[in-house]
Image (tube, rainbow, N blue to C red):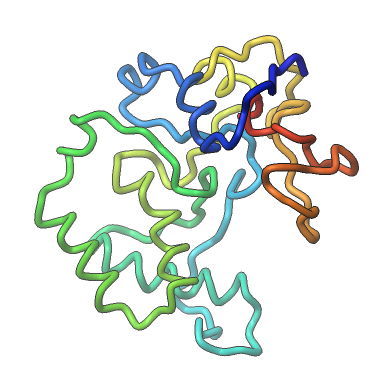
Length: 205
């Protein structure tokens, strides 16, 4: 890929992303996730269901149904008085940039209430974390489903405008393998079967 790896020891994986990230984009939009590929989280992650029979702590219940039930209940506490969205979707990982104005659109009391909910919820970290993961974009003023075209996203946010893209992703940018991680991951990869090669983190977004 043309990456000079001489003298490299270990680079924090977020640095290349932040180096390419275009600050004017977030200044003009107010909010921007630091991912563009739709895996995982888009085009929608869940359909919250307050009436779901599944409970989050039922070991035999379907995982997605448990998440949708837990999210719906949590939504009424995080956003009191607001209708529960029919669908929720955004790039997974809760990695985003936001302007000062967007942050200040919420009051200090509201931010304290989110913290209080995290302290007091009976949900395990697995579920409370997913609730917040798919709430931050709404807290900061985005619609419940926030999944822009991947090619447009890569171009506008990172200046990567010559990629071969479909709506959900761009060739060579991101691959999620539902399997075991290769040895010495993430510093090294196999370069096969969808796994990136060594030093992938220096050029991938």
